[in-house]
Length: 358
Ligand SMILES: [Zn+2]
Ligand SMILES: [Zn+2]
Image 1 (cartoon, rainbow, N blue to C red):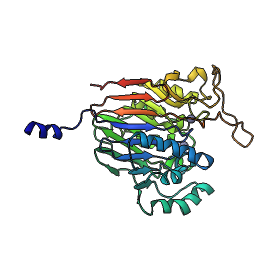
Image 2: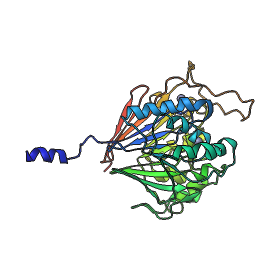
Image 3: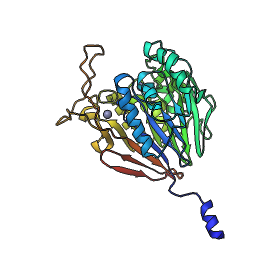
Image 4: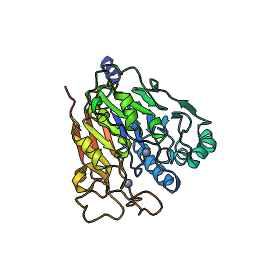
């Protein structure tokens, strides 16, 4: 009898932090599920006609994880590819806490109307939290720390971090819009496993976060990457974090730009880049093997050209990006307390385990 009680007191060895990187076509939706079944969703995909599609794809991940609700929803910033599916998702799945950086700072009709009329109704029966750097998001069995929000970064290094960042000397400032630099960024650890998601944080804020001292330290998995766009992903961030794995939330013609691919592939310690999509902006020259890519397009090409295809000038005359409205697949990370983790491509079942580093 005594032995039996002891057995129940020992935590299950298979318990993992599971991360579902959901394909929302160059937007963001990343779901974290702890062994306690507590959950954190970062962003809800695209607005407009895409909202139902993206909310449906997120709901599929929620169901696969065996969840009845989302405990915490972080909206990194007020762009339509990050809050777009929120109302649709909230109509299907209860959301208990709505977390954001505060007011929209990039005036725009869609975001301003959403914040004035829809958002207050969604959080009226739940909790609404505006976070600042240094805040923790309380999760049973999880450690989630806000490292950026509303254009501010943590000033105090995370435990064990704070070393001088050698990449700062060569930093080149970048361009950005107003809302991307406002992104709520979180650092998440589970035992020895470490990961970070910075929303669409742009280069100049990466510099503020990482220079002159690296306040984060290293990570096992780098998430988000601003869809793999060149306005983010500076060496001061990517090289200093030394991710073993990066997972890019790109679209069919958004992200995967040659400059970003070069930065990632020359990052010291990177073992693999996984992508939600083939991107025509990469071409064969810069893309990763297909087994690391979760989604194709509805009308697949027979072959991808070797040279990257440059993005057309933006505007109403631009030809549409290749469409993917059909079945979508996520990339799943299962992380163990010892720091080891397994990444799985749901499209082809390809899976790779990264052993704990000593
Ligand atoms: Zn897709
Ligand atoms: Zn975005």
